[in-house]
Every structure is written in C-alpha cells, then in structure tokens.
Image (cartoon, rainbow, N blue to C red):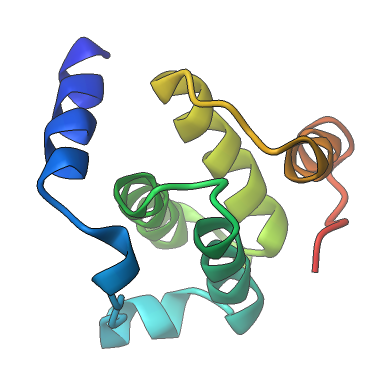
Length: 112
C-alpha cells in the first residue's frame, strides 16, 4: 500500500488538478452508465476524490464491468471510492462521507 501512497503523492505534486480534463475511452463509455460517470465527476469536483484516486476507481470499475453479470451502478462507484479513500487514508467531507458509507452499508444509492 505504501507504493500506491507514494505514487499518489508524487503525481499530485507534479499535476495541477484544476487544469485537467478527463476524456473517457469508448470502452469506458460503453461499460459505465452516465450515473456512474456523473458521480465520479461530482466526487472529484467537490474534493472527495483526487484525480489520481478517480483513475484507481475507474480501473476497478472497468475490471468489475468485465466480470459482472449485471450493469454497474452508482453504488459500485461509491463503494470503490470508499475503498480507494481508505487505502490512501484520505479525509472525506462530512456530507459526502455519510452518503458513501450509507451506500456501502445498505447498498442504497443516495447521492445524485
């Protein structure tokens, strides 16, 4: 886990998030519903996820999409976001963390 944390720190130092624009690959657009992409955008724009953390979540979502029998949802984004944030020992804004934890514990999509 230290490797991921160090990589995240070094990327963060050399990358200005406010100038970044994420262009999704056709495979990502086909596999991820607009709800999931919108939620990822919301989490990054509101400071819950860094750009690097979003990329980890996207990689995990794409892996899940290859293995899943049913379509991915916003709940998948929330759970994977929490896992990435916990792995990075990141702090969450309180309102966002409540919604993410509720999704994890109850499987409910509560954030739009």
